[in-house]
Length: 119
Image 1 (cartoon, rainbow, N blue to C red):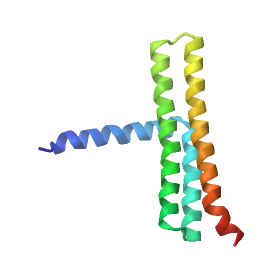
Image 2: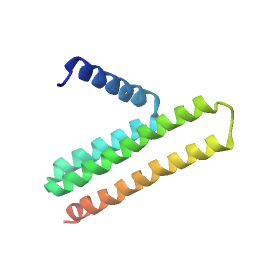
Image 3: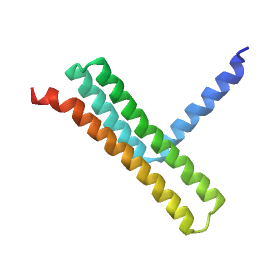
């Protein structure tokens, strides 16, 4: 049986976390602006359904990686608050994961949008 009160609470916590991350993480705000620009361009160019799926997947991947990066940074700071080479490495690795997801999204965006823009 679904407990709606518990479900409502879990959604409330999730939106609270999303809002907190959006307020505190500049990169997430920049990525959100880039995502909105890509969506506006996609609407304007009337891209195909499969292209929409790839675009939404790419945007979601970047946003998810940024949120995960923020969470891992906070956990690292709590567990090892002093400057530690391990914490630095963890943060660098997570930053690399975000960077790779963003670069992948750019490549997918180019594959989708360039043919429309060239025509």
